[in-house]
Length: 468
Image 1 (tube, rainbow, N blue to C red):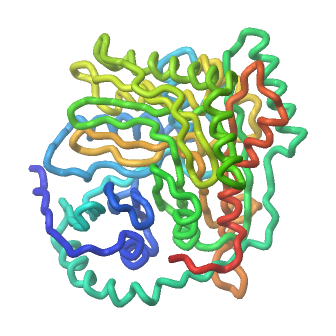
Image 2: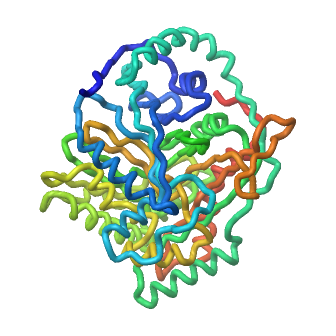
Image 3: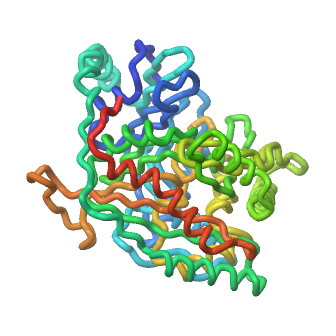
């Protein structure tokens, strides 16, 4: 028998305050509408964790269990379901299961986070920013709701105390997997493969690591102010945290079966003044190279959606739109369709994943080449993060412009005491990359990687500041 869904209204509290007080530790997923958001919805969810890795062969069983669970649909439980991340390794495994992929799926454990980490959520708080309302939703024991109600009024007292968030900047310099020469060599390798006809566009990536960073929630509070983003999120599962300021919607599926994906291909930095900023945005909008790269990925997404959507329903509803964020301008397109009869949101995920905007085209050959050439498995970066609802809805963002925080050190996960014996050293990693075509200017590709990493590195390195 299905447990009943219990819903209860609560007076408005800021989501950041609620997370700081009710989820300072332990597993949690926070889908974040942003600081002072006038509209939109934030969700804070808890549940039982399920994790799996490609290296131990656990991804197939985890994915099949997720599909089976989602088949038991119920329309009264929004936003409950599954919440967390699907790593890049899962995308490679799904491609491999689909046939024709060789040598790309990771077979060894590099000590990184799981390739899949989800909470089977049975408790959530839903914040409606326009209405300034909060609703508690649960299929768990009523004790959780009673506890939330008992602590809710005390949150107002906590607000003033938590307004100042001291920040301990890391003293360790960023450590890149590739220096400029190595990344330029990787770009050259991609261009040679494109010239040989093996691909049309390739999306190489690299990683930067910073040790001795602050705690995850303090960093995320800073990140959400420094890099406001439409797909922001904070996920902590099993000691790994993903702090997300993603601008890219990987896949959105409504309970009624409407599906969309909004790939990003094309980047320019923000200008130092209004005139320079406008010039950079115009340069992005009119760049033949960026438009060609974007169009190739749009065609790939159209093909992916055609596999799971009704004939004639797939359409490009937005092409080459320039969207501006605090650190960069981006070139964005949107493809939509309607799932065919019998297809589910997870079928759409499986068809789209890994995202073409993070692989290149054709997808299978691109991931084979890049898996052989990149320094290490991508891990969570290039994957997806968000919600998979019991009502059939899916809302997943790309894991880009994100910081992954783990406890451990460069010796493979050993726990070290932080300054003053405060606890284990926390290690932050940032994945960055870009799309390479035959006409790419290699130095520009390296500069773009630096632009994408800069705002995130600043969050890790800035001196103590007021966080609200």
